[in-house]
Image (cartoon, rainbow, N blue to C red; front, side, top):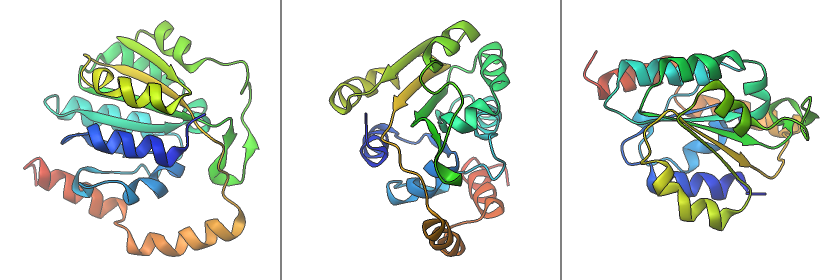
Length: 196
């Protein structure tokens, strides 16, 4: 399994000018790694990270879009995989951090955590390519090639479980006031693309 922080460090190293759309748990951690927060936008709606990322990728076809979804989040919006594959954005890279739990809400196990293969689901849905990684060295070695493939590309990363306890949720809630809210993030992204 791969530590989420290590995975994010590798992605940041190879992101270039890509827009990054992190889901809940990833959205809390990603600002610590991002060096281009004007191109980061979190989804406030639970399970809609993949849908938001798809919209951005279709609106800006010349810009890479990296989605950092959670396995719990994706389970609540599986239809987005078929929609993404059907729309076929060549600039979309859909990462799923699979830790087998709803880490944002305290660590409840996700249904079918040892049965479901997101990589196989992505292939069946029609993604152009689909990968699964559980070793950091393998991930770090292959990520540049993966991010240069024609999308949509799906990447399942088996991550170390890291549930938030109540005290951590309360602490992170206070930190939200120091991060950009969604309206500020959207305004910044629109400004980046010159559509303001």
